[in-house]
Image 1: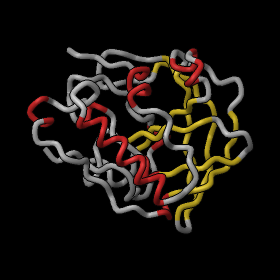
Image 2: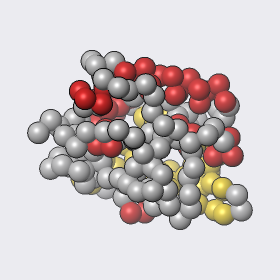
Image 3: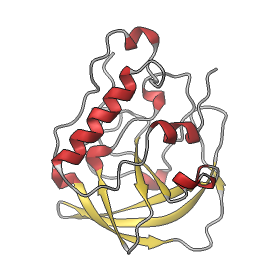
Image 4: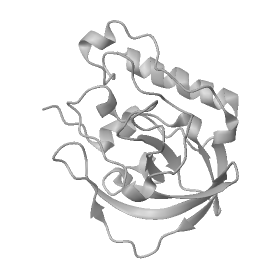
Length: 199
């Protein structure tokens, strides 16, 4: 079985989720991810799917899903092995919580750090935000989606769900991908970001 580490996933998907809200930022994200998926050297797509690939399917851009969250640092969190779709269990730590509002409802998500990834200089400020929502398994990938973030310099953090992407497992079952923890299941629909892959 081909197993890919979170380290490699992050390298192929540079931190994109900390830009300010804006249509141009979302369009740049889409162009970059489509370019990488169309490149046989980097694409997670199976050979037969790569032959006909033109673009991923996205929800319409909706800047209402780009939110400013209150960031609360978690202290003294113990490292844990995050379950994946394979046998691999990478070591993570809960780095903090983000509190935000969508519509008239308040939500909370945990953000994590991969303890191997942050040993690399360019990723020492990287935060990992995996989540599921009411679109998971319907309009979006059932295994949840990811957003890459960067450590904030203040107690506020911008999260753009328009830049939520699927783990590689959504395209090829040969990969091993982190499963979003239960506490990161949003009780709402996130109609933003990448949709289910249509083969």
